[in-house]
Image 1: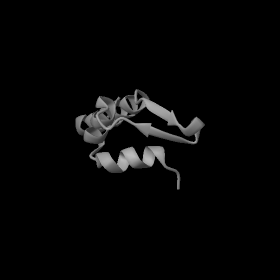
Image 2 (image 1 turned 180 degrees about the horizontal axis):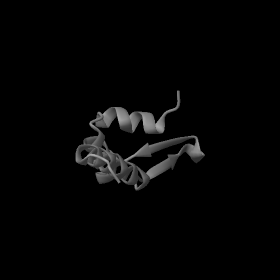
Image 3 (image 1 turned 45 degrees about the vertical axis):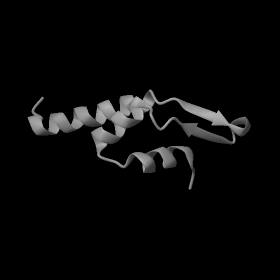
Image 4 (image 1 turned 180 degrees about the vertical axis):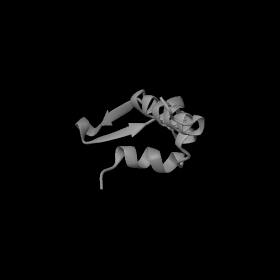
Length: 66
């Protein structure tokens, strides 16, 4: 397709992170007004390591609106 190998690896990393994000188990709390994610969730760990984002921040902002 003409995409450099370094760009291909970046694309694969992003796609893998998105797929892991889709496998997160988000649990509803307080009749659906709030949610939580297990901090030991392997998919969240993989997502954070693939994209280089901070685990605690990602866990927080996936469950809080602003």
